[in-house]
Amino acid sequence: MTSYAPGYLKLFKKGELNKRAEELMAILDDCSLCPRDCHVDRSAGKTGYCRSGYLPIVSSYCAHHGEEPVLSGRKGSGTIFFGNCNLRCVFCQNHQISQPTCSLKDEEVAFERLADIMLELQSRGCHNINLVSPSHFAAQIVKGVDIAASKGLTIPLVYNTNGYDSLDTLRLLDGVIDIYLPDIKYSDDNAALEYSKAGDYVTHSRDAIFEMKRQVGGLVVDSSGIAVKGLIVRHLVLPNDLAGSEESLKFISEEVGKETYMSVMSQYFPTHKAAEYPLVSRPISHREYERVLEWLHRFGLENGWIQEHSSRDYYRPDFDKDEPFEED
Ligand code: SF4
Image 1: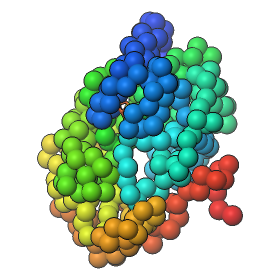
Image 2 (image 1 turned 120 degrees about the vertical axis):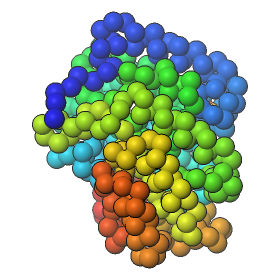
Image 3 (image 1 turned 120 degrees about the horizontal axis):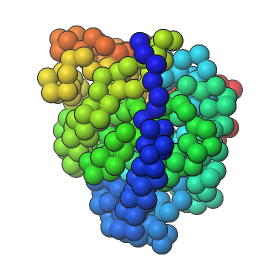
Image 4 (image 1 turned 45 degrees about the vertical axis):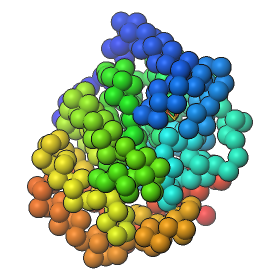
């Protein structure tokens, strides 16, 4: 347990945060912010695979009480859901905002507004700023954080990513992000291609996890048990073992470290286009989940959290509501 000042504050005081924001924003002129490498001029409003231009798109924000306990604490994780995505998961539970049927242009916000949202979440008592699907807006986020830091933002930043991240972008986030929360979605590129349209996911996500670990190290919590720094890896179990759980857990254990905090999730629910893909068209079975927990144990991954198998129905957001996770 320790007291900890977020990394971006140190960079802000040295003027380095502003420089990082400028460097990242320059990438938008010929965008290679993520592994898609679209090379479109987002500064001129052009869009690539992620369908996103110059300004950040904020589809929703709230104090989220359903994240891992070290993130949600008592007052919630200050969660900002960015619109659009650089993956196309056919089963995405956030598909209303990640793969919308119409343009999200009217949800674009100015950088000052993004900063004000961060400050509002902090003033509500949230323990951190939880950036959901940040990869295609990494530049805009750092610009927003630079403004927010000048106006008093002091809580840690959580980079809550699908894991399909570019190493060059991550290197520019070194010292900016306090807590990395990547998914490890697949261990087989054929599955990644079929279900998320990313046939090079495995290499990119593994390289990203190594870089994240190098930057922030193991999980550190404060005297209240709230995360202030470090790495937590999420793994969503898919039906028919399409997530390649055994291999992914082995990779984390043997190459990232047995001490890694894992969050293993049973909440898979066949939504969005999943019904069109027979192998992902059902929830996972009790036996499938038990087997993953056995692997977790076998590979000595004892830090972290597992969901109850029966909890799978409680994590389905509705982004038509002001608070996506509130029940009717
Ligand atoms: S952030 Fe968007 S435009 Fe840029 S490389 Fe990735 S998908 Fe393409």
